Length: 293
Image 1 (cartoon, rainbow, N blue to C red):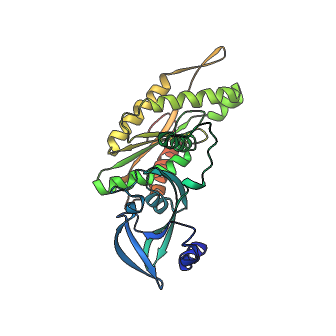
Image 2: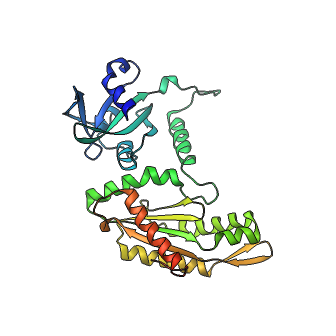
Image 3: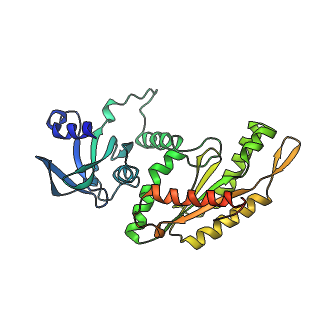
């Protein structure tokens, strides 16, 4: 953080290197000027620097604020490829985000026999971002996607006064599967479980992710705790009834789940919501497994 603030203090040195260096209120999008350690609110909104009247669909400021870490992304805006670096900061008593923006279009090198069309550049960036956020074994989203997406979902839920629910799943006795049948069998179980979770995605706002190892997450915006529990129970039951082909064997597995909702939290942070769901997941495992808590 000290290094970040040093950049801000000496931003006149970096003016020629970047297109914009500014402080942003992540929730409102308001841009602040920093002078003598004091923040002064401006009339500008963060999206105006990108030539847009709407907030970015994948807002790095909100992600940086909620994840409390530096976030880097590429955006394709108005024919230009823009690099955006966002980092949380506490300045003049306010939680803000430092944004560094650079148009890197002319510094990109693309080897091709003919000129690359604008839509191709956009598709390349989208493909790159997707590869970076998808778990290759299960086809679900990965841990990085959770870190990037969940803060935006929670912020949207806060603004719209809508609940956001999480279900955390863990495959029961997964180590025994690997020990008894081998790691290829374990991979087949993970892939099958991921496919079942993915089949419960009904809206563009929902997502299923592999949280790590044999643990999975289902995120359901605009869904209360009761409905999330019902969906988790349907998933648990379907997993229990599904046969998985492992060589000459047909294997059945079970999963345990913990569910939590943003409406239960006094402070809306992704870490708190995940921790609550995870705590209930382990309560399910400790109380006999193959159940939802």
